[in-house]
Amino acid sequence: MALRKPPLREVHAGRGAKFTEFGGWDMPVEFDSIRQEHAAVREAVGIFDVSHMGEIEVVGPDATALMQRLTTNDVTVLDPGDSQYSMITDDEGTILDDTVVYRLPDDEAGESYLFIPNAGHDEEMFERWVDRRDEWGLDAEVRNVTDERAMFAVQGPDAADLVADAAGSGVRGLSKFEASYAEIEGERCWVARTGYTGEDGFEVLCPWDGAEAVWSAFDCQPCGLGARDTLRIEMGFLLSGQDFDPEAEPRNPYEAGVGFTVKLDTEFVGRDALERVQAEGVEEKFVGLKLLDRGVPRHGYDVTDEDDRVIGRVTSGTMSPTLGEPVALGYLPVEYADPGTRVRVVVRGRNKRAKVTTTPFLEDK
Image 1: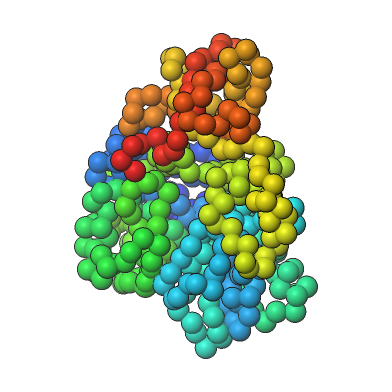
Image 2: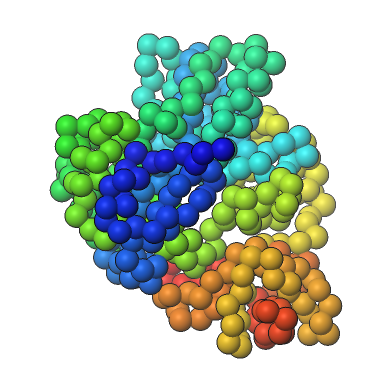
């Protein structure tokens, strides 16, 4: 199957980007270097093309009811312009995907939402929403608009200045997880104070055909998925398909450290199973790890106790560009999950000393 391409694929190639397959998309992994792009976001500002993320609109009289029953958080608390982080779970409470849900301004059709599945999940989630809508007899239109809009993330301490210059000073008034429409280079854009880096920043959704004009409005370091990964690992943020996966790494929100997204006083698919998990507790927890020896932890590496018994595995790992230290994420039995616990990570067949630590790895975040 041919890879899907973001609207600026050739623009990025002309800038010298290197590409990788991710979630069925052909995406830039780096423009200059991961370290340079990472530093730009931590110290100033950088821009990512994240047009591979899914975009699903849900509109109509029963849009709120449909969103409430298919996501774990409480969408009824959202006013137009608000957003929230949430999980999408199956009947057993296993995470299928994580998402950000935006409450859009209502229109003549009724309540309106936009939610963002991860790369390659848009068709699956579109079908899930349509099938459950029909099963429950709800009145809501579900639209997969992934191929109609580009999405850019402008992230870093200087992001507010840059976005205000392009979109108008009104965006400065947005709090974290708030959004509004703004005009950029003549294009109507949805501008949200959200991101995946741990820095202040905005995500900008714009028409597919206007992508180049909007991208060019932000004069800053272009960044690829490589830096996006190192930035989110430093924060301890989950990556769908890696830190959780319904088949390869089945996890519930409590194991994955995102139990705050679960509102058990609402009715959603998986609620009863997750109520039992909350009452009984979990056997494993998502933790941060710092290597005390030289080596770079990678996805799939075993974690052992000090007697070399395998007790878990790394789900994400990197050499932290900010700290200059090897860090990792993964699941460990609760008896090993306390910060400071000494364990080992098997790196290329060699045991490397490590300790459990809290996330984010950056103390000032």
